[in-house]
Amino acid sequence: MKPAPLLEVRDLRVSYPTPRGLVRAVEEVSFQVYPGEAVGLVGESGSGKTTVLRALLGLIQPPGRVSSTLLRFKEQDLRELSEEEWRAVRGGQISMIFQDPVNAFNPALTIGHQLRRVLKLHRPAPPPDGYDAEILRMLRRVGIDAQGKLESYPFNFSQGQLQRIMIAAACLGGQPALLLADEPTTSLDVTIEAQVLQLLRDLRRELGLALILVTHNLALVAELCDRVLVMYAGRLVEEAGLYDLFERPSHPYTAQLLRAIPRFPAHGDRLYTLPGNVPDLAAAPRGCPFAPRCERVVGPVCQEQLPRFLPSGREQYALCHWYDEAVVGQAVAAANRHRAGPIGASA
Ligand SMILES: Nc1ncnc2c1ncn2[C@@H]1O[C@H](COP(=O)(O)OP(=O)(O)OP(=O)(O)O)[C@@H](O)[C@H]1O
Ligand SMILES: [Mg+2]
Image (cartoon, rainbow, N blue to C red; front, side, top):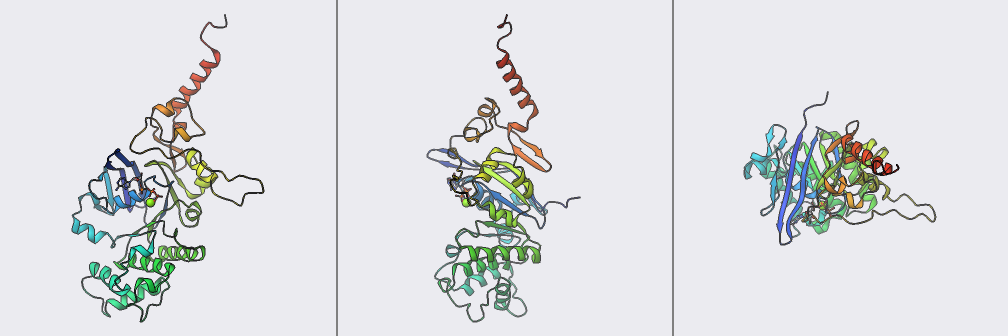
């Protein structure tokens, strides 16, 4: 039997009023994360991945609007937290690491100063051997010997080191149960990327961390994740276990994303790119948001009606009419009628 979810999100929506109209950045997103699990959140640029993470940490600023029917972390209803309670959760039980390690630090303050501030926020009473000893321990854990270097500035460290320091900072606030990582290796070169990946794996094992990994790099997902959520135009379009996602993607968008992964194309092969563009989120289309780019349109229903999120395999779901028996049945009947022509036409 599955344990109780660590995080439960139901019907999350985030919108931003803009001069062009209301941008629906996240629409009807529901999912769970179980303790210790690594979940990948993938999708093209602008699909709403970062917005989901920010909403989970209560970081959507007005005029942005957030709503959900459930947002529960452990036993806490995150929707009811005061700003002070949020500060304890953020960086304490739920931590976030960002894409760009350089901009995550204040260039004018020493690393020691910045890490001490994080630690003091969550641990008002110093550890028995002092704050610095705890910081050095955490830095060693991420592979950085900072003895005598705490008074150095961010520019004294390489990008890869700063990314490790950011991960250390994310774990300093105590024992985070959930780490949110937004494109944590995009700005790093491949060798450093491999080291950071290994570090995330080790931390998961040692601290029992659950992870939500946001990326548009499916190779990274394959390396690290157990389960995958695919977003398109603010909506969740597929949820699948890692193996199923790669072996039998159920949403046409996922299938097209997988085809777009470069795999040393043979001589003469063209790299597949997804046709078309992501829709304008301020002009919510009727029907399925992916219909204009879809290779598996069931019928006019795809342009007219939003699909439901339906089972498409074992513990696999897709936002697609293809999995709605009633819709497919009607489409087949309509196609047959069309083929037979009007009744009596052949007489
Ligand atoms: N403060 C804001 N005001 C208006 N629109 C916003 C705001 N923040 C995000 N958006 C819009 O919300 C949508 C989702 O953005 P988001 O940054 O979550 O996408 P993403 O999937 O993280 O993309 P990327 O892969 O490029 O990081 C985009 O259309 C973006 O323009
Ligand atoms: Mg983003």
